[in-house]
Length: 152
Figure 1 (cartoon, rainbow, N blue to C red):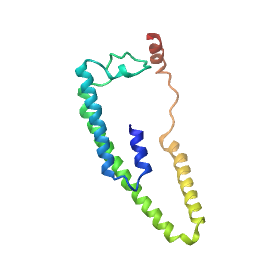
Figure 2 (tube, helix red, strand yellow):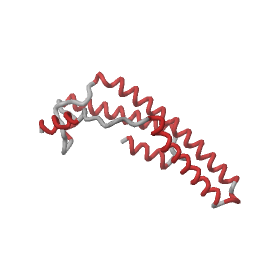
Figure 3 (tube, helix red, strand yellow):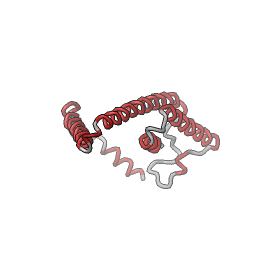
Figure 4 (cartoon, helix red, strand yellow):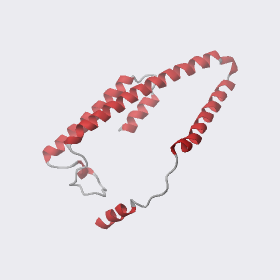
């Protein structure tokens, strides 16, 4: 659902209001909570709808005590999505303004824009490993995979 919402936001940045992203996200969260409540009333679990599942369908993945955290997370992600949409709209307007100013220099201005974008992305990809650092491979999680395979 999140991927579909993001796709709509990206595809229609000029027609999709930032507030609509937040409303859509909140409605999605409310729909999930209502579905969970209906499954609880029926005594079933949402995992009964899965065709292939590696876990037991009777073990719930979350409980109602987790709802405030989920709602808070949903609200903050929705606000960040609205902020990102506004930033994208400003960048889009700036690009349109620059294209109008540089209309005599086309297509070289667009080629320069693509080149600048590639340079920025390459610098980010090159600098992130220097900032974050790499960790050594750990064998700690292998026993969990072996235990899960053993239970099947």
